[in-house]
Structures are given as structure tokens and as C-alpha cells.
Picture 1 (cartoon, rainbow, N blue to C red):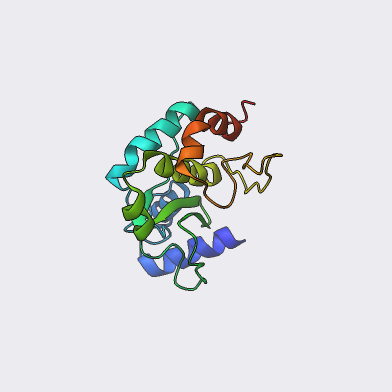
Picture 2: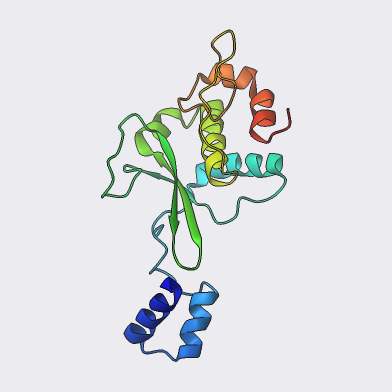
Length: 173
């Protein structure tokens, strides 16, 4: 029912033929209306981390831009100040949109720390590409057992245990 309402609203407001509008809705050819990610383009310095993830994943991440911004959440949502990255998902009648936003101040402070960047990008892609949720478990020594731990951990610890965290992320343990 919602689908038919959306099509009829689009037909009333655009003046296109029924066939053209149905084709646009069904084949995702309407742009700038339902895609809330306008202006969110993947930051060039993040591309190597995306490629590393895709190589481990064995396929591409699809249409998930990873941008850097001052605001992580839409204006109508409360924004926790200690959050440095977020995977956002929106739905429309025809598809799900995903985007990852990295806080500008964190990005600027950490862009030269390769493992801090990898940890954040791999964590957020764990949410967006793999549909993983947070895992707050720690081992007997108090160390995080998952890259999906809700709080980032030291770049040194991540570097020393990187392969373990990748294997855990991709369920290879």
C-alpha cells in the first residue's frame, strides 16, 4: 500500500507518464529525492582502508560512502559527543541507503595513525557491510574480544592483534 501511495504522489507532482515514473521508482533512477546522503562523498584518504577491507571481505562494499563531517547524525537526532564514527541507514520504498560518517576532529587527529584509522573503518564497515552489532565482551585479561567493541582501543593493541580482529570480524575463528 505504501508503495502505491508513493508512486501516486510522485505521479501527481512530477507530470511524467505512469510508465516513466514506475520505471524510475522500480529501477532507482530518482536521485536527490530519496537519497539522504547528498554531499557525503568518500574521503580520498579513506580509500586505502576501504580497499583493505574489501580484500579481506572478498567483495566490494557496494554503495556505502565514507565521509568526514562535523555532525554524525541528522539534525533531528541527539548526537553523543564521544562518538567518533557512525554507520547510518535510511530506508525508502525502493532501497536501503547506508553511509559512514567520521567526525572531522577525530579524523584530523588520527589520520596519520594507520591502525587507529583501520580500526574505525573496519568497525563501521562491520556495521554497514556485515550487519554486525556491538560486542562488549572482554577476555580474562580485560582485552576486547571483538573489533565490534563499542569503544575504540589503542592503535598499538589493534596493530599487535590485527589478524585476530580481522578473523573475528569475518567469522574465521
